[in-house]
Image 1 (tube, rainbow, N blue to C red):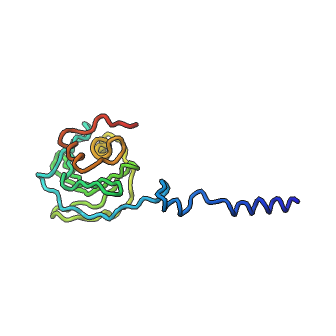
Image 2 (cartoon, rainbow, N blue to C red; image 1 turned 45 degrees about the vertical axis):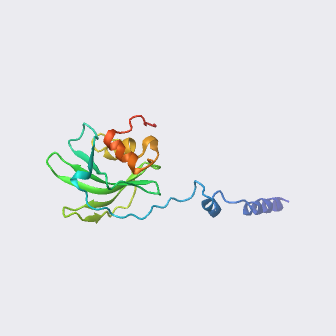
Image 3 (cartoon, helix red, strand yellow; image 1 turned 135 degrees about the vertical axis):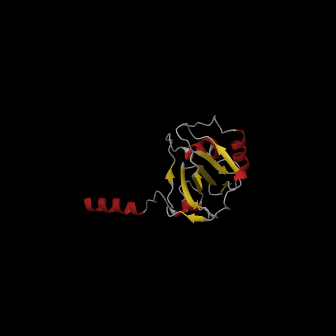
Length: 173
């Protein structure tokens, strides 16, 4: 009797559907895996296309985004060229992406002095943190690219925010 009961219980587990199945992915479930779109490197930034933005009083660097490089991908990633210039004149150029849904960023490539790109060896997405000295990713996330934590509607909205000032009323946490 006990063996029969155990056998029935064990057989019952064979007919329980899994919590996650391939059918869930096909039906557009939230459980489907995110896939990043292919990335095309933009042209090197030109001075006349740079849009300045304020990061923090804790840094002497100047920060710019190349307005012509901004794109909003169908994968939910805002891509852009970032230019950081130190008070001494040193300049760093990078092509980056911010994923609003997960509050992460990544580097795609770094600019060389001759205007070419060096692809990043690190393909990992990293968490965006609000730290005083290096908060440019947080500033771009909250004030320009992801108002309310949601990807912006269009590139025009982003450029407009750089021209008129950041979204200040979108603090969502």
